[in-house]
Amino acid sequence: MREDYGIATLIELHDQILDQGEGYWIKIEAWRVVTSAGIPHGIRYALTLHEPHGKRILGYDNAHAVKPTAKFKFSGQRLAYDHRHRSATDKGVPYEFQNAQQLLEDFFSEVDRVLQEVKQP
Picture 1 (cartoon, rainbow, N blue to C red):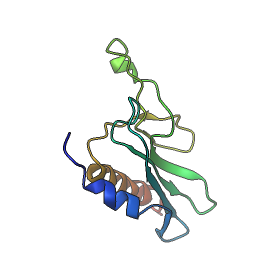
Picture 2: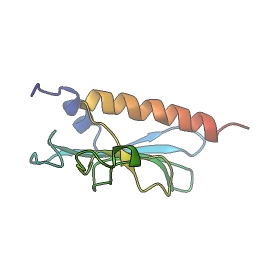
Picture 3: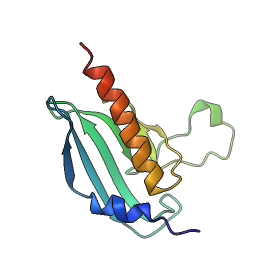
């Protein structure tokens, strides 16, 4: 497996709080762990967007396994650890982790989309 240079960037962002204006904010947590079947890339992470009162409204993480979506019901039944939460109540949908750089790009792209939706007059 090729080395993922984006992991160093993600680790450097650990414990950062990023102001997004109008009370919205991002929290980034990331640290190295021993690789396993559930975490083959060796990094534990949680990237979250919060509304002004602190409630998470978007999140990408690998803190727990999520069931595959219905369209993959009869395929290998591998539990996904990398996943995203599209709202405060979403239990999580699988996210296909390619590398840490792509994770950051996907997260910040979705943050931009969500903030544009919630900040519309």
